[in-house]
Image 1 (cartoon, rainbow, N blue to C red):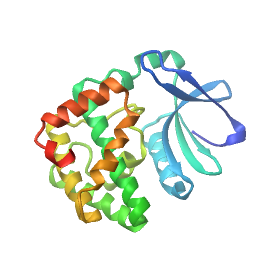
Image 2: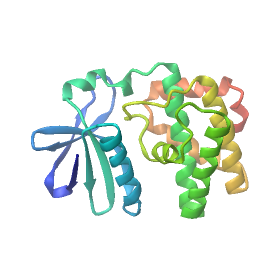
Image 3: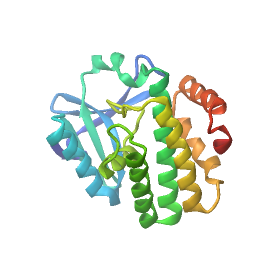
Image 4: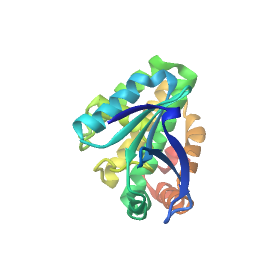
Length: 220
C-alpha cells in the first residue's frame, strides 16, 4: 500500500487494553497501523517480499517503513480493535505455537549472528524440509519459513494452523537442527531467553507444558 520514510510518519505507543504491553503505533494521513515485523538494514529484500505478500496476495493495507538502521512492516488497524486483538486471547494451542516460533527465531538469530548468513540460509532450508516431510499444514514453502523467522508471533494477525503434536515435532527437529549447526546442545540455554518476550502468564503456561512434554529433556 505505502512505502514511506521515517520523516513521513508519526510513531508512538499505546497501552494494550488487555495486556501488560505497549503497542507500537504508526500514524499516516489519519490512518493507524501497528507493527507486524522488523528487519535489519541488510534484509531489505525480505522486508519488501513480506510487504508485497501482505498487500498484493492477501489484500492487506500495509506500510513498509524505510529507516536508516532497519525496515519495518506495519498493518492497518482501528484502535478499538486492540481490545479484540488475537494476540491477547489465544487458547493454549495458540500460546504453544507462539512460543515455538519464538524459539525457532532464537535459533535462527543465533545461527546468523555466530555462524553467518550462509548457515542461516541453510537452516531455513532445513526447517522448510521438516515442514514438508512432517506435513505441517500451510507451512511447507520456504518463503513461509522466512515469514516465521521475521514476524513477531505475539503481534501476528494469524498463526499457523498447527496442533499440539506439530509443536512437539517442531521442538524435536529444532533441537536436532540446532545441535547439528552449532555442534552441541548448549544453544538451548541462550535461545530459551527469547520467551521473555511473552507475557508472564503465557510464558509460564508454555514452560509448564514444556516440562511435562516429550521434549522436556531436550530443552531443560
